[in-house]
Image 1: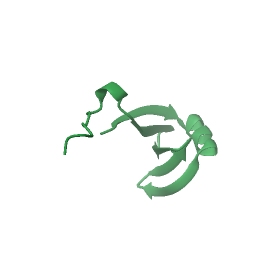
Image 2 (image 1 turned 45 degrees about the vertical axis):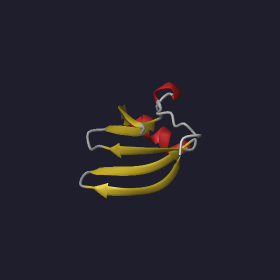
Image 3 (image 1 turned 60 degrees about the horizontal axis):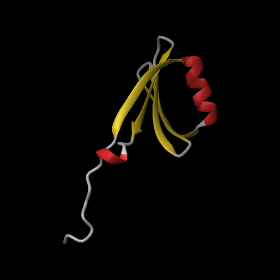
Image 4 (image 1 turned 180 degrees about the vertical axis):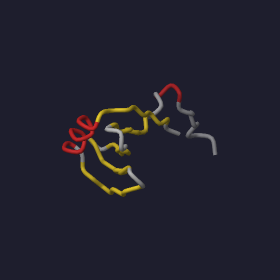
Length: 75
């Protein structure tokens, strides 16, 4: 399973992200707006907050050595 990584950014950085991304969906939730984006083939969730900040959330794949190995010969 992938881990989630998030970071806070100013609205100016969010606007740059929105320009380079494909907008899949967006919804207003109270005084915030939630954006579902595709950036370079990755799903990204961005939440625009009323205070001039935004939170950007995306999945970070586990490194190969942390993935569970499955023996293809075992049945």
